[in-house]
Structures are given as C-alpha cells and as structure tokens.
Length: 282
Image (cartoon, rainbow, N blue to C red; front, side):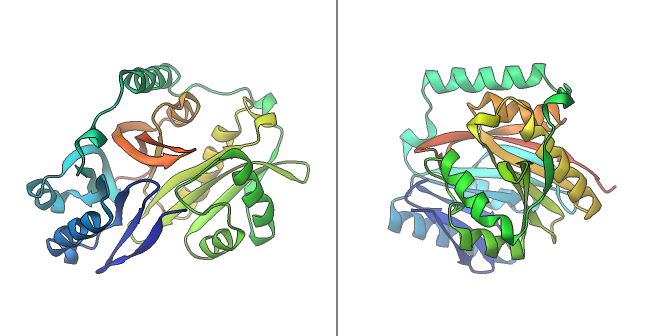
C-alpha cells in the first residue's frame, strides 16, 4: 500500500509501513521546534525505523540537537539561495547499517557515473517523439509504471492520482514510439521554493539502452528553466548504475547517500541525491 501524504502543522510529510519511515517533504519554518516532538510521536505510534527530511540549513541545528544526522546536502535549494540538508534519525539500529554487498554496489554505481560525467549519447538511437504528457495520456502512463515497477512509494499505478497530481504540481513527460508510450518521467515542482525533483523514470524493457532517460531529463530541464526554476534534483536508487549515470551525464553533482531510505521494487533501498543549480542568486 502506498505511503500517505498529509499535513503536520503547516508542513507536509509522507509516511507508511512499506518504506517504514516518515519523510518530512516540506518543512514550514514556523513549525520548528514543535514538529520534532510530533514526528517522534508519529514514528513511535507506527514503530517506524527512520525519520528523514529536507531541512533548510537555518533550521538544521534544531534537528541535529534532536539526534538527526546529515546524510546529503544541496546548495541553493530554496529560491536558488538557501541550502538544504537531508537529515535523518534512525530509530532502529539495523536501519542505519548496510551490507558489504550494498556498499560495493553503491560504490560501483558512483564510480561508473563519475567516469561518464558529461558524456554524450548516440542521438541516432533516440528517434522517438518526446513531449509533456496530458490527462489523455494517463491510462498509458499508469500501465507503463505498473509494468516496470513491482511496487512504488507513490500511487503512480493509479490513473486518478496521475490526473490529480498532473493538475496541481507534477509535470509528466513521455517518449513515444509512434502512438505508444514507452518511457516516462516526471518533474515534481515546488514553485515557491523554485526547485523540482526529477523522478519517476521508467522505460519499457524493449526500449532500453537507447538513451531515453537522458533524453527525457534534458526535455524536463528545458521546461523547468523556462518556468524559472533554480534547482533540480533527484533521489535515485544507489545501486542503479543506469540512473546514476543518467544524472552524471547531464552534469548533476552528487550530494550524498540516504541509507536504507525508500521502498521500491519490493525492498527498502539506499538512495543517492544528485542536483543541478540552474541559477544561484548572489
């Protein structure tokens, strides 16, 4: 069952048993410090193993005093000028540990990404129609996501959810082979903070290894820049060579690793943060 998104004070959180965590998605500074006790109470009630959030650096000290530690960071995250710290509190000791196999796989993915930073792709392999998706595309979009992911932390298999988020704050993009949607991605926007998460990448297995993720990411970047967004980022599976290489190729910078953070494809995985500053105000 997908995690729940709801308000906590004037902030927004996501939580649920699948990822066994609370994610403080958007902190209202006015909720500090009272939100710390409320997060702890919710975590205790549901016996969650981890609490993590995107914390504006001016508020990070309050979280550090409450036992949170920084796992990643993005400069100029809010409005192109205020840094953010990804801060976590592990409520269960085993949640903060990763196996040697995971550590090796994560290191390998980062090393390959580093080697391919800024590398071009063969444009002859990307002869697809790429465009922003609309409500009429959501049936195909839901079907594609369901075919690619055994499970996902958001209800992207639900056409109603896709329509609702498309109408509010998420811009979905797709690559078409004739009239068939074969790859997709999304930009989850925060217009107030002028940042956007580049996420929800999925490609039909029959159309992989053709550079479609990079093509979609570049199309989203053009759209985000035109709309005035300052900072783009992603939270990508740490062991996925393909997704880490995609962001490195497009000149994103590595911001850190979130340990045992997100349930995706049937298990809780560590995630890598990548970011690109389009504009940083002085």
